[in-house]
Amino acid sequence: MLKRMTFSLALLTAAVLTAGCMATPKNLDLSLAKKSAGGVYHVELLPPAQTPAINQMHSWTVKLATAEGAPVRGAKFLVDGGMPQHGHGLPTQPRVTREIEAGSYALDGMKFSMTGWWEMKLSIDGPQGADKVTFNTVVNNPSGR
Image 1 (tube, rainbow, N blue to C red):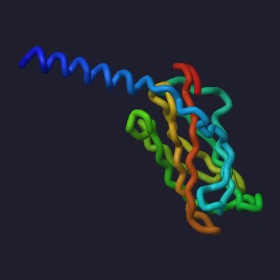
Image 2 (cartoon, rainbow, N blue to C red; image 1 turned 45 degrees about the horizontal axis):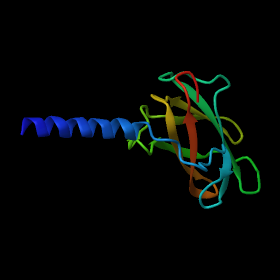
Image 3 (spheres, rainbow, N blue to C red; image 1 turned 120 degrees about the vertical axis):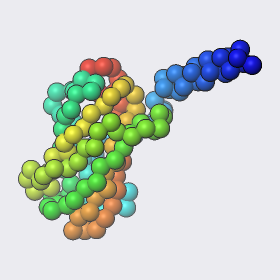
């Protein structure tokens, strides 16, 4: 019985390690500018100028415009995300902390704890209504995205 349990644990460990090393899905949309799910907004996500290292806190910029391209002021955001292939969320609780200028917002508290495919999800509550958008990014090595 103990041999079976040890063997089963070894198989489970191998399966978890293999799942953690999954290849990024083919045709993954890595665009950082897109329409929100309902088409209410055009959203652009700007990464930091210098690629952050793994486990380094960093900030992004969210540019929010109407579908016609006018900057959106006074929007509120909820931030979520994680690694779909690993089944876990973000290691921090990033949030939009302030409006930098008309339609441009600071997204602070980002951190990637490992390489792989990450989703960044924004729920938007603005003057034109509520909508959502999801961005994908791939962290390829310990010192970069």
